[in-house]
Image (cartoon, rainbow, N blue to C red; front, side, top):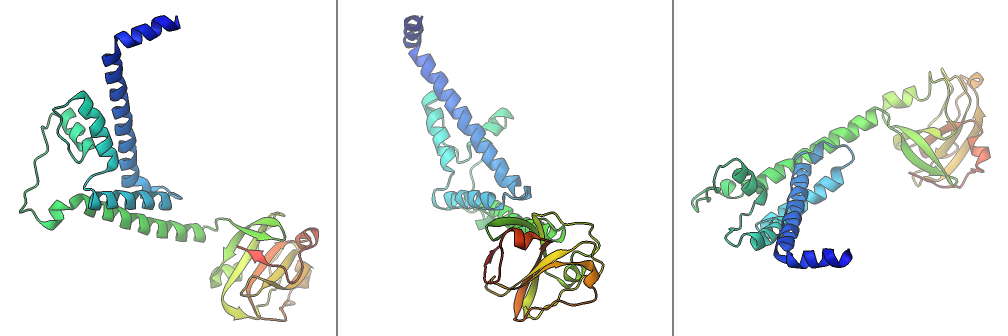
Length: 264
């Protein structure tokens, strides 16, 4: 059976090769089209900013130094084997879309055309790049305002923390919450070092409190601070830049002590 298939393949070698070229060219075309779509709308996808930006820069540099996308050239070289009369078009995607719409070949750009007209595609890419930066900035700020959890490493344990880095968030703290999971915490971030005090106003559960200096080194600890201690204010003996609140018993359970460092 294998011998028969092999003989059939060799008898139809030209047809088989053409089929292979056609499949390869169409695969590259679809991959190219996917990348183009990602460049066009990738800036709208949260978390894909860096991937989009890198692809965008590669595309811009290819257009500047080569005058075409390498995938376009690769696709053309394959299709050239199928049709020797094919003339290279810098934009294979637009070439085949125009062919599909029966619009004929794309008109050449006049040598007298403006700089913007000659480099319109690069300008469009730069616009997508600016949109990517703007959207990423807005998304990051929105993410912070919505209190999305971030990771913090302390004593060999990872905590999911919310960051309180403005006056409104710092005043609110954990007040009004019903509980705090063992792997959760709240990190107060201040603008400058100071002797920042913590009290238990409107708290419903006990917590452990950790003060950190500018090097993220633990300088003071208060364990199992309960709501009944209000209005007492707990202060560190030294200057601090961060204050971390965790569930009660977390520090003792994980053997966290003064002098340890925290990573975030």
